[in-house]
Image 1 (cartoon, rainbow, N blue to C red):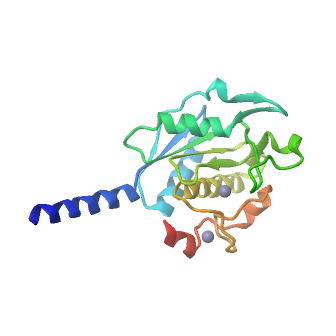
Image 2: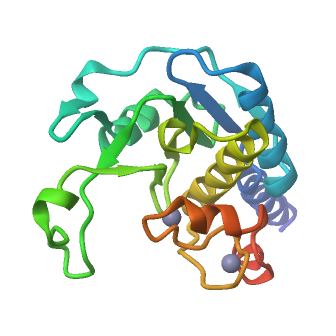
Image 3: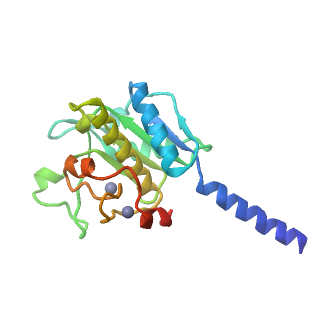
Length: 202
Ligand SMILES: [Zn+2]
Ligand SMILES: [Zn+2]
């Protein structure tokens, strides 16, 4: 009986520790230190876990496409990030200054129309839901004052890790899990935090 109880306690402990899995930040190429610091601080504040910045590496060539413009496929990067994730890290967030893209599909699974627009669709970020990897790009966030740029990077990082933790898009006003609906102005108008409803789910 004692052994059985001990096993239950151990399992409970393992379960708790996996909930606060370490988040790793994987820079692709050179990412400025203040940007990495700002992501570290917002993820720590939001998810109450340890954040580790991994050594920078090059974007994989096989993710590169030039369909409408030079971009890296976000879906390929998610696979690469998941595969390269060290065992000690629960979730991995990649960051690049290059443009990233995905194929945008409707609820029926078909490519959204017009196909020429959505087959290779540029995004701010992408993350598995649920899963262990996500990727953000600063490409579409730049050319604004530093404070606004940093706030965009922070919100998108919190949003994509939220997807990794299983969160869907949320309609609560100001919630960081709102769907950007194809415009950065949505990101700018939302807050930095998960709403109470989203927070309770993780
Ligand atoms: Zn999203
Ligand atoms: Zn929410």
